[in-house]
Structure formats: structure tokens, C-alpha cells
Amino acid sequence: QSANTSCKLGTLNRTLRSGMKGEDVQRLQKFLNCLGFNLARSGPGSLGNETDLYSVRTYLAVKRYQEAHSTEILTPLGHTTGTGIFGPLSYKKAQQLQGF
View 1 (cartoon, helix red, strand yellow):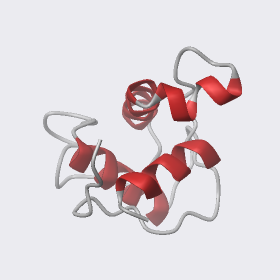
View 2 (view 1 turned 90 degrees about the vertical axis):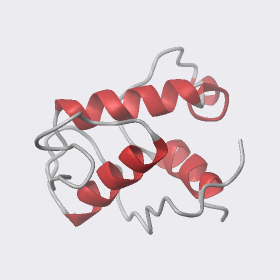
View 3 (view 1 turned 120 degrees about the vertical axis):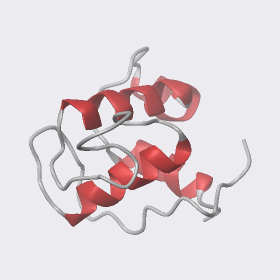
View 4 (view 1 turned 45 degrees about the horizontal axis):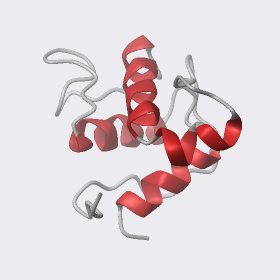
């Protein structure tokens, strides 16, 4: 898969998981929506309506993102299904997708 330099995540300084809030969570939602791992079709979390809360919708979108890139994200950890936690391997893959 080629780099999608139009989808920007930026720097993350922490592992993101359900229940967290912050500007970095909102950037993660925008990144996932940009890549097509949409949080929602409309309302909170949908494209242009991203929030700063790591909700169930964020969790499920992260899970789909992880499973789409399972070789790089899940296999090294011994997982076969997404964890919904946006940690170091998920971030590393995101950097590759952005062309870093």
C-alpha cells in the first residue's frame, strides 16, 4: 500500500485507548476517517465531525485499521484480531502510511 500523505496524524506521545480524551484522539479520528476506516456515517465521529473522546466508534475503527494491517501490527504481538488500542505498532504503521 502506498503512502497517503494527505492523511496526517502527527506526533503521538501516548498510547490511545477507550475513554481517553484529547486533541490527539481527535487527530486519530481524522486520520482513520481519511484512510476510509470511518467512525460513523453521520453525527459525532463522522468525517468533519470528529470528537476528542476515544469512544466505542473510535475503538471499532482502530480495530478495523489494525486488522487491515495485521501483518505489521497484530502478528508481532501474537494477536489475530484487533485490540482497539492505538499503541506503538499501530503508530509505526501510521507513520509508514504517511510516508515517514
